[in-house]
Amino acid sequence: MTKQAILAGVILVVLLSAGAFGQDRPEAVVDSSNLTGAILPAPVTNIEAKNHKYDDGERIDLFWEKSVDDPDNIFGYKVYRIDKDGASELVRELLPGTTEYFDEEVENDVPYQYIVAVVGEAGEAPSEMTPEVMAAWEFFNFSKLNILILGFIVCGSVLFFISSAKSGKKLFIRKIGGLEALEEAVGRATEMGRPILFIPGILDLDDVQTLAAITILGKVSRVIADYDSKILMPVSRSLVMTSARETIKESYMSAGRPDGYNDNMVQYITDEQFGYVAAVNGIMVREKPATCLYLGAFFAESLILAETGNSIGAIQIAGTARPGQLPFFVAACDYTLIGEELFAASAYLSGDPKQLGSLKGQDIGKIVAMSAIILGTLAMTFASAWELGFMQSLLDILNSIFVTN
Amino acid sequence: MKRLIPVLITSIVGTVLVFSVFFPMAETWGEDFSLFFDIIAVFAFFLGGGNLVRVHLIKVLNKKGDWKFSIVTLIAFAITLTAGLFKFGSVDIAASVTAEGTWMQTIFNNIIAPLSSTMYALLAFFVASASYRAFRAKNREATILLIAAFIILLGRTPLGMFMTGWIPEWFSIAQIPNLAVWIMNGPNLAGQRAILIGVGLGVVAMSLRLILGMDRTYLGSDHD
Image 1 (cartoon, chains in turn cyan, red):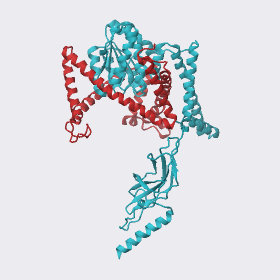
Image 2 (tube, helix red, strand yellow):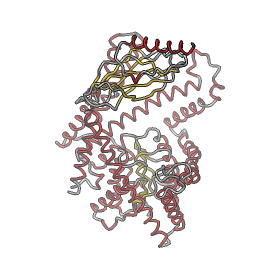
Image 3 (cartoon, helix red, strand yellow):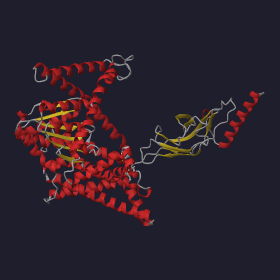
Image 4 (cartoon, one colour):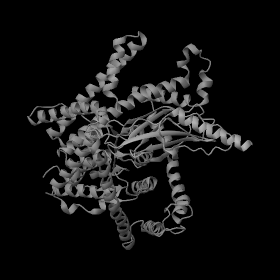
């Protein structure tokens, strides 16, 4: 008698659920194996499936409001995708509390519908089925239009100043102490008869800081070749080793001293961060280089290297774009190239007007950034202190220009 | 020709990577180029390992200075390479080389990790010696640095609250912990962001020079 009552209850609940949702659902979606007398959890509401904007048509975004039984009386959610033939497929099981899912396994321009089922002790309570939605391909990502415009302004100004420099216009470039001291540092090592140690950071050649270090190496090794001094370059990446060898070799050749070069100038140590540091510290203590150059991407090893260099009395020039490591270099080295100076070094050292023009072009970007910061600060202050509407509008405009996601 | 091809590759790859940010159809191209880089890097491992063996082998054979250390390096290299290649200790050849119970895992847990930690621990002493030099009040900037550092140090310890906890709520900014938070979130963050803006612009200008082939120093020489 009791079993019959439970079975009748289950059938009633399933029928009511089907009637309430009023849309066709594949049978597989609804789990009616409720034989315990437990009540199905409340379904999710306001389910919405949208084409993900500005992509190559491979994603549909699904949003819903969570079940009122979430989180106490549910186990989680199941997302079902129904294709144009009506076949349903379970695409993901999600934890309680989830209110969105991004389906990246869809085909371009194919209609899909979705159901999100709430899973409880009594079974699954499916949601309404979403209207048909298609993942559409878009040619241009308009959400990044602002970045493109800003990019054009910066690149345009760089190109403008390059062409100005080509036409012979004199450009003022402020002196960078660390770069001015490079030749002096190499000269000092030559006079002392000791080598120059060059550390290009610990990242691979796909990092722009390593690339900047290699470009500086080209200039430094040319001076070293001219002075007939000696360079030591232990590296932590094989690709950096091959690239650095080629760079130094070319410098020696252009200096007219091809016989002065040998492959042992650049030595691969290990990719392991602290293993590399231990080896470099050993080289420093044994070889006692007169000049240590640390240019590139550094992490925790920055201070260990710089302090060891300091202890052997070497003149030290460092440069990195990682703000977290700059204080260590500033504290332990004689000169430090801060952020952009590392990237400017190659152009600065070349003295080539075209390359120097590119440095001048950066200034336009700085003017734009500084103006936006000042305007934004004023707008934020006035908008919050005196609730001026037009200042809030200005703030919104600035936000839309500089937002990056 | 020796320089033209690398410059062309740089220009094409650089341009495509920029396009991949703005054009959805090109999004995956950037990832594909990263894969190419990984493939090249794998081959470069042979060069790196080969160089390591060659340098130390020559040192041992010629009995150059500290050649005994080179023996240690060569033995360690051979053992680690063998353990990794043949997956000794692994129950299944398809299992990860660093799975529990493998020689590699044992080597990592008992040798590499403690040695790395030892090197990392040196930082504690180096921070002290570098701070000592940096915090000497030799000029105005160094004095400001010293005061700021002192406030941060006190603010991060219970002593800061102990010393200034009596300051009333309406002037709580003068409490050292709050002052430390203000320094970190105000002047410190502003400085860091200024550096990052400069870095961003520097990267753009440098990338442009590389893509346009104006800066070819990374190929060894600026000249054709």
